[in-house]
Image 1: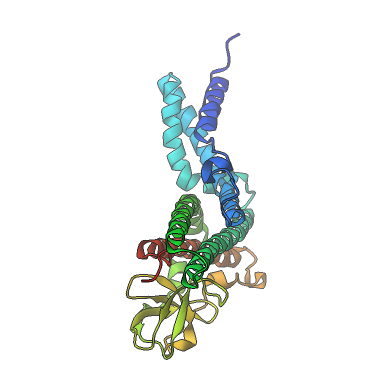
Image 2: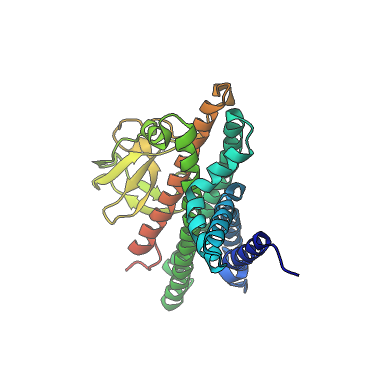
Length: 339
């Protein structure tokens, strides 16, 4: 029995999307657990957070691909056209599919605001989990390298074994960064969809939010006292360097009483802000906490704006963390024995 052309189109497109959307298993992405990786729990946790970003927001891209496929198939009379249409529609869906899906489902503008607010809230919570997972994994690797250096320095491990272990930790560190880069790519793609929605529903759009999030440029100063540079803005984070009072470094305000420091070797990390001469204070970043819901207007526009600011900031923060890890790996990152 002949099948309806639209049914055939949908079935063909669904099959092609399933093949294109196939994802590897966690073992395929990060390798099987052979018991040799002391940071395996942190690695698995980071990888698990990435699954969220592989899904479409409200199936926006899928809707765009389906529409493009049907248009292409009907226009050409051939179902090869459906696949071409799917590719074109998918590209369009990557930027406008989410917003279009929200607008189709919403009853009115208030419902649009409510849906985008809810989606931004979920996205921000997941970005927070991804940031924490990445930070914990990086710290785990760096602490492991520090332990090996200490064992060699105290004679409890021979130098050759120490070098081999550090090389292994460094290789894992670099693989971790590749995983984080992959996740960041997905975050960026979803961010493009959110940006389109933000530009539509927030007065001034993303540009106005970024202007309000202005941070003063870095300045070059020397610390008042010797300070350790940490990978994360936390006293318990792994140390990635040390700055002496005579060392001039690039400094800009960071979160929670820390300054973001870039050393002469290009390594970026965090040190206590009070160790440096007073600098211009930056406005509180949206990542330090979303604005109170009481600030929202009846339309929900203010709430969308605050959530959008948090979203943009957290995306930028994660990308910056991955970049800092890359710099650290290139500079050696404590994966070499002294002397």
